[in-house]
Image 1 (tube, one colour):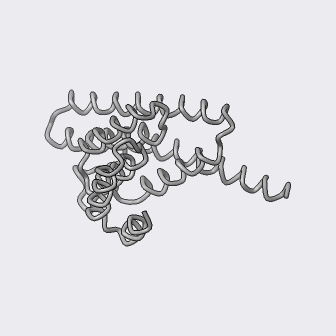
Image 2 (image 1 turned 180 degrees about the horizontal axis):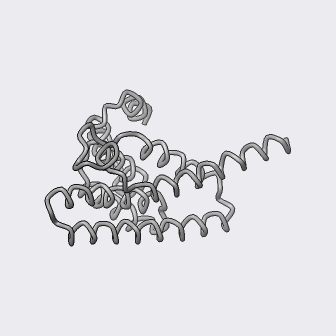
Image 3 (image 1 turned 90 degrees about the vertical axis):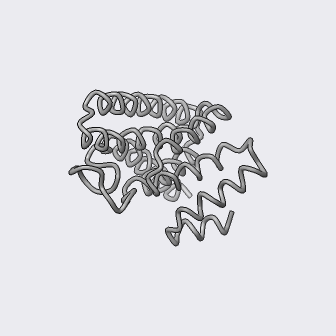
Length: 178
C-alpha cells in the first residue's frame, strides 16, 4: 500500500491502476481497492471502468459514499463528450445519472454522520475532494472547464468540499476540547 501511495503522489496513475489490480487479485473482497483503482481510472479518463469498479465496491459495501461520488464525476465527464459529438439525449442521460449518484452520496453522508463515523466520512470526502479538484485529463473533451470533467462537476466538488470542510471543523473542535 505504501508503494501505491507513492505512485499516487508521483501522479503515476496507470501504475496505480496496475498496483490496485494486483491488490484486487489477492483481496477481491476489499471495496477500498476497487475505489483506489476507480480513482486511477478517473485520472486517466477511463470512465466506464470508474463506474464498473464503483459498482463492484457497492456490491461489497452498499453504503460506500465515495463510490457514488466517483460515479457522479465519471458521468459528469461524459456529458461534455456526448455534447461535443452532438448527442444531446445521451448527454442528458449522463447528467441524470450523475445527479442520482450525488443524491445517493448525500443519503450515505447523512447515514454516516448519524452513525457517528465522522472521521471515516471526513477521510473519504478529503480524498474525493482532492481527487476531483485537480485535472482529470490533460485534454478537455469539448469546450467546458478544465480536465475531462468540463464545467459540470460543481455538484460533485461542492459535495466533497462540504464534507471535507465539516471534517476540518470537527477536528478543530476536538483539538480545542483536548
